[in-house]
Image (cartoon, rainbow, N blue to C red; front, side, top):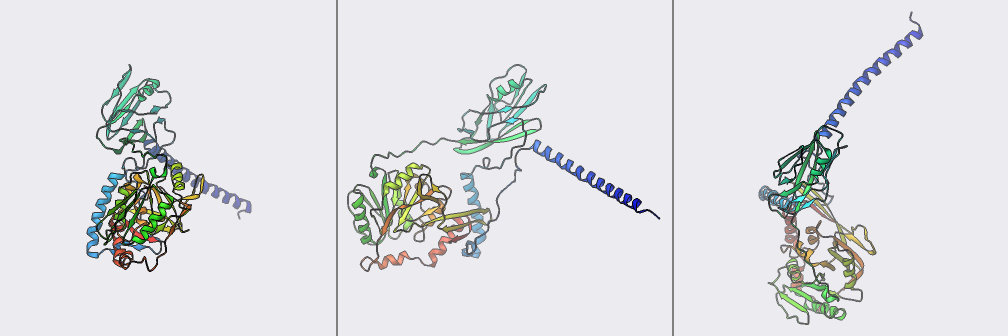
Length: 479
């Protein structure tokens, strides 16, 4: 009969054998994976060509599903047109090369610019920062390649081989690392086709190491500046849109002149029965009847010649708290800002726009969140960043003209301007500048105005259909 001690020794031996087998299997797999990882990172430093961050977005609870407003017999054909237009939009607005996700491999001996290398189209420009940091070798060989331009170097020292100068792939080989780096410092890139805003990707290789870096190709813009002058009338134009509310309009004009006697006022008017509005520094533009709010905004803003314009509704009224200078001060202190809103009779009304792009088939998801704002402005604690503001705001003229007001939106519109400007306009809201709102009485009521002011379900459905195609949205929520 086997003793107890012998049995224990056998159990220990079996356990050790099992552990050794697991050890060998585990570490052989680890080493294999490490080898694969090391080889992959050594060979490539860029993401796969088809890598994409696009994904279906999730519609917030309570969202309007916009496809529900499209006729079923039109849906398929409309989606195809929308997809084609989206690709054309991306071609105009987004450089495929410069938006590609790139990865830098670890411990690379290659030195290259990772950001800020900008060239003018068709213009030879040195590539800054190119270099090789490698251990001693009998010879050093690097290559550079591009797709939308050519690479050049004009110097060929002794014991150096240069191939492809003036072509899209340049190879440099030298026995001296110092000489090689001197040559890399003299390599220039020239785009071969004229384009005002595009990009290229340069591939830089040494042995098994590869790096890819972006080249931004941009035509410099000619500055368009506005002479601010020394007074508020040289800096700001007041704009408004009116329809069948001349009593309100005259009260507004009188209140403006009480505080700002010389500021130019531009009025866009699409009333059916027009009245003549006169006064110094007042421009009154008569439109075809009932063209709508955004068409009127476009007309008014198109005639502004000052750096800023102040938008007001025709039933507002200036008060001691309507300090345009305060809004100008904020805009001048923060030149990146495009729009600064105030408050209307204490109602500051601002909103955040939460947007997910979604995929290219279904479209994006948008949530207009009332009361949403971000950080306060440095030096102006009464002001905060946001995405959209109330109908009383100071705006940078050229920035708003670039976005524009869609004249298809005649009555159900305001937030839509800030939706179109999302990612283009930088917006803030300030609570210390306020304007009053006139009371509506039996004397200034207009039955014809009310008929057009309050849209029917058809106007709402039209707007949602427009968002589906124009803004490539799957759903939208107003909160």
